[in-house]
Length: 270
Image (cartoon, rainbow, N blue to C red; front, side, top):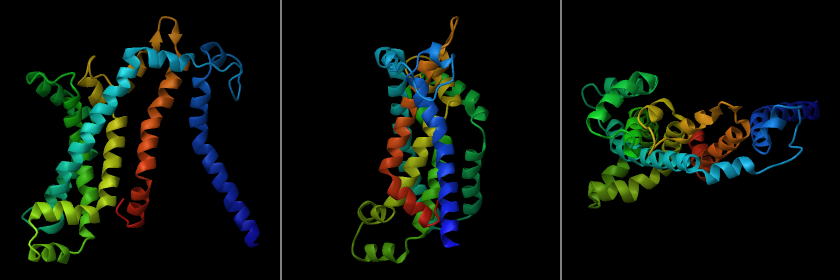
């Protein structure tokens, strides 16, 4: 009975993993095919593998420049969001003030609103300051929904740290900046890793605001991918190769913060 149950659980898990990995495999499969083969007969693997699609991306500045632009503003946004969220989360965690719960809820409502609501206000505001088509414009705009998320995550981790640690540090003569950097931040390192991961991922996949605020110099890869449609049709192979390369940064981030994410789920903070 136990063996049958284990076999059934293993089969279900295997089918689930195959179901999740199938779209990724098919994307990789298409990236090594010519358009004629993609649109031709059905095949589980490339009959005539080619690297032409990847060659197009790495040889065309408009393609690889899109990856550089996306990584640039996403990294900027992740750093800004976490640095801004740390003191805000500490305040919500350690102090009680008039309207704190309402303010905390209001922060989360910014994350609930769709990006389309803020696209036009951001465009007009940044146009007035000459920030259109810059990396910092997109990075700051994404803070609108990433900072509340980071505050929410970090506040949960900080609330799990006893307040006696703060008091003991003050008695030992630590200034607040020294205490925060040398003692408190290492205690919530997993929370910082989880917050940085979610900020990176949400900024990486967001397209509407990034496309609205950029034209050429800071155009993200997701916007570049939409130009594969031409008079000759859709360039499926190049589009698939671009999709594979788009997955890689997110996979690398997940790999480096996997232990923090697992700890965050174990603590019930994510």
